[in-house]
Image (cartoon, rainbow, N blue to C red; front, side):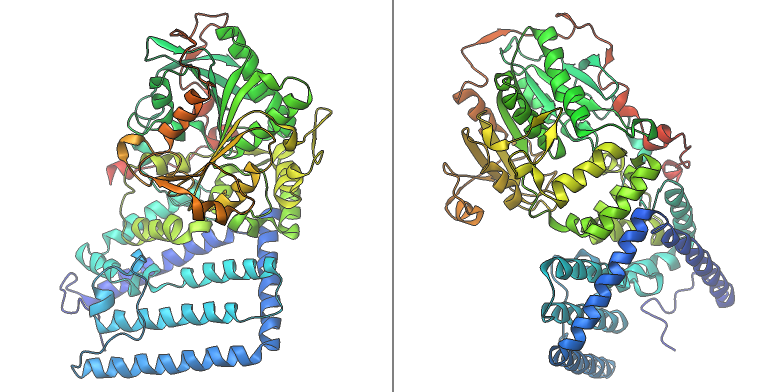
Length: 618
């Protein structure tokens, strides 16, 4: 019987002991993974996703019946290619050098190990897997009679299925794991079991795989370290004023409105990539909203509460701190959606001049194309989410993080699954991935309303489609100058959807498209000279027409934004004042940045003790 590329390895003198140990590991893994998969669908939200998946597969099966010729063609090609792979494997055993029937994409990092391409066993199973994936893709592409929404859902669920079946995800069919298991006498599997138990204990639903060494970072020590003070707080947010690093600053302060789905310090990770630090160095008096991590007690918080207790309250506090009645707004992701509604609210209540300019980073206002996240927002799934929100009063941020990771499952789930559990390796200390795992809950009153009114019904683009505190919101009335920056590979706020939002305001609009994705394209410091960006003086109706005639620029979009601010006098170089220090105005420091709110973890908020992390000792 063939034993694999490592045959002859004497890691275990007693093959029976080796077999018993592997069998024991296998049983434990199956038990633990069954526990993990049982956690996928325990809630109303999870059950509704599962039911939606089943319904999509049922519709897909019916479509196959009505598209029998296309199905037959795909099946025949698959059978013929599988036979070729089998014949080639026999020829290889006879010593022939035979080209592969199918090769993985060069960008597919799962199959970069040389054994996938040089060893007959792994070469064989890889080709059979790739043929299966291609057949599924071709079958879905040729199915007629599907609505765009159903096709999208079916393609997403099918992708999750085929990627879960990749031979790289299993101990016995991953050459790197086989080698490591023999080299370490199975210690990698022991370590993997420990990490799997820890991650299950720290998960809400599904499996939140640890992506970074949690013990390597401390907020205020090696993350979120730009110096400043919390100068104002309420039940929903703390307001940080950062210490100046220039002798003079622009007269108009800058208020940053970050998302509350994640924590603000993605904009202040390390000194060399901190947008906050860079803005301070450009001469801005920078204020940052740090949102509270809500729990069941905050279930009734609404979008209007976030607006009033967030940016509106912050503007009032900034006036007390600096004596300035207007600010420049810089917003990110859902914080940008909130900023847009806030500016529209102020405009309709005759207070629009409180905002001199507004910048939207990776922000959706038109939700007609929500991207892959739309899979989780069909009507049945949304109804399940709403039932769970009504019962619990919040959505656990860890459950949402699991869903978001499935949007990039090979990079954000399976790669860590392999390294953590199969190879038994400790996650590296990576600040961005630490932040990505440091999630926040979402209050029921806000999140359900947001998903239905924005994502599902796209009411924000409708004049008067939503009403906040008695004011009908109309983005078309906004005359405040706007700067939109999106990123080309963003899978959360797709750039063409963000571009549609840039078509809404009646005031002057600048649209810039950065390279990379939702995080890297925004957190792109000039010193790195990475990714680049596109600019255009016009905003035509068609985003693709905009891109076709746009001009590519090297480096970061940050200096372009700063030039936009200064050239248009939103941050007026001719109107500067002596550097402002926290506490000099009417507001006195409450505590040093980053403050208490950003340190609140989900287990702490929910009163649950997290599992101990022993990664530092392994």
